[in-house]
Length: 326
Ligand code: F6P
Image 1: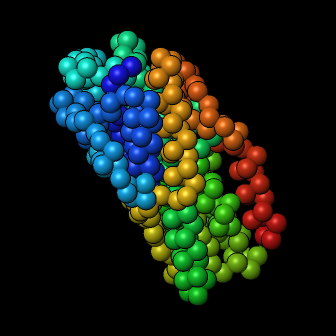
Image 2 (image 1 turned 30 degrees about the vertical axis):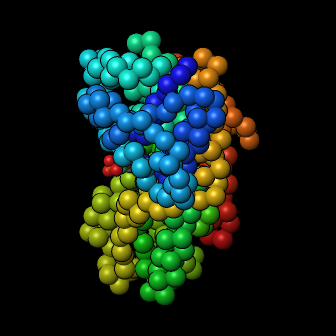
């Protein structure tokens, strides 16, 4: 291949710029030209594709977000839009595409692959829900941000003897909530895999209370059926102010922003290098992820058809460690 392009797509993740940097540098090292697609798949459809130089990736490793921009592109689900994207890539003489993104983005990449265009994926999402990778770019940074925030919330919760309902990202996958629970010792964790009805939450809070815990942290995944709003509403109706006070903290997009951690920078460098190598040896149609301490190449057919499961052992451990006292 002489020319390749790269696109960052879906929700941004800290470390995407480090992945762009490694993709462009590896392409140049292999004697290929690199092109950047701006604003995710929107740019692919609209032919917003620009040549990239080494100067474009100077001093970007440490920056959060993505210098190419990104988008959630609903219309890319249509075959016509994907065909238009391929036409635009071919117009520039581009023979392969690196897609840096999460689940929706890699499903879009699979669509291009099915239409015969050479594409490889780089696992990048704070949610860490991609099948084919134990860990994805951005997740470590997001977790560090979450833990720093929860540690701060704990000191004020303890001082005021309050219950805090804390919403974290993750959408349909409870990894961030589970890991945040494990690393912070939060009393209750609610995820799409381990739901709890509001009355159950109240029973649990009362049990903690009876056993001497006069404050509590409840971490909830944003995509859980029993979300923070519903639980808060129920508790507000059912609990007297004198029993316990409550506050809600939605951590929101703070979790996706900021400079990437060392781990995410290093992961991004390695996954992006693996992706360019796949294109170089004309072996596309795979997601490059990280499994058991090394690069893992998973065919797109598997990535889109299989579901990543939450580690139940880790979940049990995190809950058991809290239960030991109560
Ligand atoms: O997929 C990443 C993610 O941050 C989810 O955790 C969250 O539910 C969603 O994106 C938020 O999406 P948006 O940035 O489009 O509001």
